[in-house]
Length: 555
Image 1: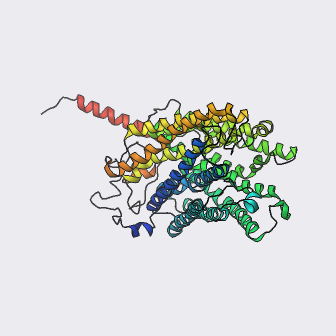
Image 2: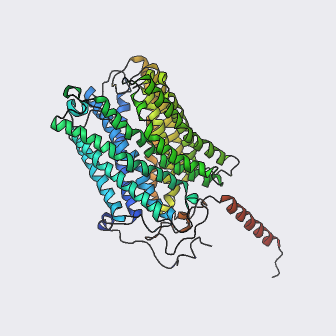
Image 3: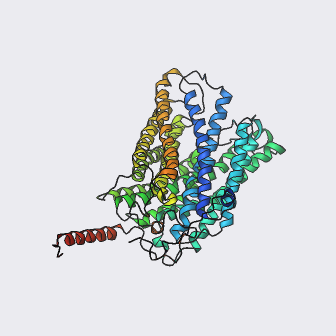
């Protein structure tokens, strides 16, 4: 029997059939807004990937013969700005969060639909300003905009990029506010905090950081603009300012921003591992609490980015200990996910491949994070490729693997179409192999002393850089494949069943793609992870079918 026959009349078309551009640009449907974000974010990801390709081609040879020193500065800055502010931070919350939060809550939409649409327009305006800056000369300060370079000396379009980041930040604030109010006030009857899907817990924790932390970086960038245009002495020591103050303000937001990128991925991985292990998530309450714990602790560890700025040994020791402490709730998640998989009926569909790949890559990123929290190691490898590798293992290996895993998992629900499973598995393997081939050599390069942001290097580093560039080519192919087969699936993919994975979440109990108002009648809330009961039910039905087949026909 169809999972929604008690709620929907199959003869009635509940979908919005108006496909005009105006209907999309003025839509208040959270699902369509998620699609608008997906298209925008994918465009910025491709552009950021092109700059990454230029970086790796430059580092193929030691001489720095592809780009000038100034051109290389602009390329790696533009790569960082696009990937962090326009892809990594908004990707899962804006796309999967917008699509899924009301569905998982049993609501017809987010709390503030017009504000939701305005958030996309604000994000788009910020992105356009950043792209204009890239076209008209770029920016050469690095994505961190360190002062006094950015506020006084940089000969580039700093203000355009700073304004774009400033505006895009308001999109994150408004989206986070929308999700907080939706989760607090629009849950269906029976959906208590103790039954909330773990993706919602991850989104909730992320929204807290967005609302509380993003204003800090907005003010900081505003101060950079004031110093640059008005000559105020805030960060420039020549004007009586303090450049280290900028670092404190910037990292007070930007380290929690790491968790803006990774906490939603944690929520995705919890859903994937439970669904494809056919088991209840082990230690549900611990995983939920650890998400909030990470969000809170993330605000008190920022100064580990400043160990080499003259900080006192006492302060550095305190922040070193706090940084190691935040590894505890992360380790709780890793242990609980592994235990969930233990003795489970694991199905190796594409989303599960991404989930397992996430575990391997994020484990390396997390362990190297603990290494960087150690004062002696951090001082030795500070501003080397060791830090670059660690950052990418967490952000690219973690956030993007989570995003792609979630996109593959919920794609049949979003589109009502299936993608080719064979190609998607090849893509997942290519991304995992290509990622490790790209970034693991950079740990070695960094430990050997190769500094980041340099476009030329000693010849003894070339072999590892060649290996890294070769891995990047594999990684690029892996990322390109989903763009191809997802587009193909929309046009020619097989029609997806309502629940192709046999998942238990509320979003899988409605048609694919979901109707405009999500739920025609008030949904009945059940346990989103009760796979043991579902498996027992399937076994009883199978036994009944076998017994019926064994009875001789009386015809």
